[in-house]
Length: 384
Image 1: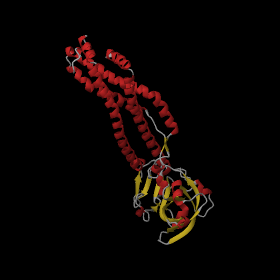
Image 2: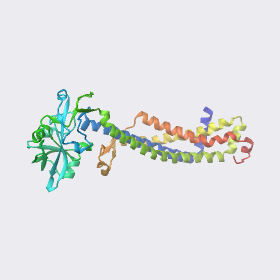
Image 3: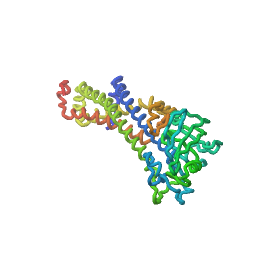
Image 4: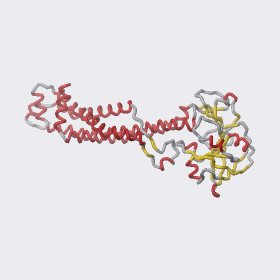
């Protein structure tokens, strides 16, 4: 085996430019696969972290009649705060309201939350500082749609618990930037005590955000753990991985096809050399191992070559990040304006192993024909 790798190394170095062209194509595939896999891992980690910090906390307790994905459940989906959860959770009451910026009507969700809470990254501290009658904070997406900024006043209309309409001006106390669209798009945040006063729904909430991770079983309420809440996002990541795997398969397939053609041509042109090896005492399968070793060494050269330009590039991307187009940010999915790739040991090792094994297998397939070679005909230069 050691002799096979020594001969393979000399043969590839002797081939010159052809060797480095094949290694270059294979290294490009290697770096692209590594980059996009790292990008998805970075998106996954960022999305999970942001969802927990901005919306999910350590889990949620939802009223049995409230479904955050069904706006028709907002009117009836609320209930009194369970006594056991008063100190252990952050209460949130959701109502459907209309706002009228510059004479336009927008239907939005009005969420009441404790202004003094520290669990979520929502800048509710700005609600405490504001001297307005009804202060509100909104996300930059909501601000863009409604064309509002800090200090603006906008008319809001709502219904109380008896279905009676009321209206009053709301003052924008702050505009925040968040990667989580569900706390931003189509939503206003105000102090929950003010919302209780406006609607008459005293001490009632739509859901509770837990401060500590613990399973809770309370009649009339549905407990959702972090894993359950993050399941839709993780499913989205899985779909993205499947889509990327198709691209990677095509890209790696092109590189391996180039290597396969090179090995076929090499075997065809080196028939006399192969016959000489056999005549000197090497078995046919030893010669097959030699050509397979050459293919495996192509992958090692590709990894070496890829490291020369790949390591600086990948390191730069972990610092600079990858900018996401504005159109993607408006799709309603949790995604940052810049994603910072993450390259773990398992990702790097798995990608290296994939490239080495693929190159070895592709090199072995045409080399099998050597096992049926007649050395006399090979030395004479006859076609295999």
